[in-house]
Structure formats: structure tokens, C-alpha cells
Image (cartoon, rainbow, N blue to C red; front, side):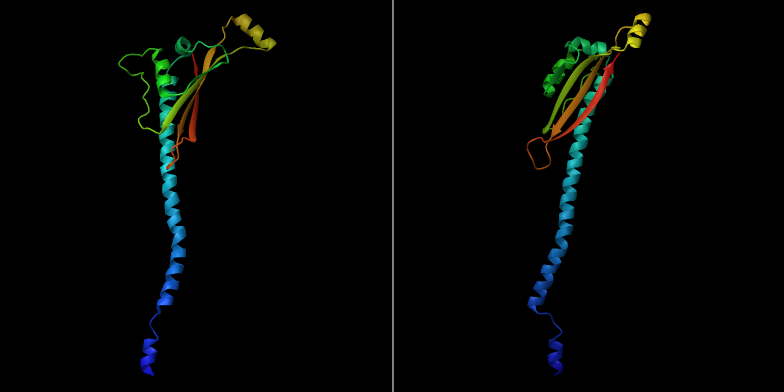
Length: 175
């Protein structure tokens, strides 16, 4: 009788398998947490990189004056001028000239998978109210020329090949 009791203390193979099934169900959410956390971290890193690429171009244009942009973008007021890739952007901005020592050259995109585009809209401030017109006439002020610049950097999510996420930054360039 004592021998049977000692043998009874061990687990059967069926009990061990049932315990393993329950343990696997318990660890599945933890595994998914790590998997999605890693994907989110990679996605955030790509978004930060895209923001830096857009910021490079925005900072370059913030140092310019509207009169410098007027040499390049001669479109009518309110008309959009869109450049769809880095090569077009660089060609247009090289027309402005550099300030020497190559300091004014826009850094290109280093990694593949990012697409930078830029839209420039020309505005001319005007006073449409009667008081504003009288004030402009009396002060003989000229209208202020300014440009609204939007820079868009598109990138793909980790694991995808088509760029479906984007970062958009804006700035105003004026004299």
C-alpha cells in the first residue's frame, strides 16, 4: 500500500501536456507584446528620420529671404510650385546660389525608402479693408512678398515596400 502511494505522486504525461498548453496560452500575449513593441520602435525611428530629412530642408529655407526665393519661384500669386523628388528640389535651390564654402547646400536623403517633395506657394500681403488701403496709401508701404513652403517626406512602414506614411513640415519665408 505504501508503494502505491509513492508512485501516485508523479505527474502523468497527459497532465504535463495540459500544463504546457496552458503555459503557451499564457506566454502568447507576452510574445505579442514584444513583437509589436519592436515594430513600434522601428516605426518611430523611421518617423524621426523622416522628420529630420524634412527639417533639413525647412531649416535651409528659413535662412533664405523671400527675395532669394523670388529668383527661383516666379509663379503667380497663390500658384503652387511642386517638386516631387530630391533631384528637382536640389536643381531649383541651386539656382538661388550659395553663400560660399558650400554651407548652403541642402543635404540629400541618405537612405533609400524615403521620398522628399516640396511645395512652394507665393503670397503677397494686401490690405483689402478700406482702413488698410488708406493706411497703405498714407504710409506708402509696399506689399510684403512671402512664400509658404511645405516639405513632405514619405516613407514605408517596416516590412512594407510602398511609402504610405508621411511627415509634413511647413515654414513661411519672407523678407
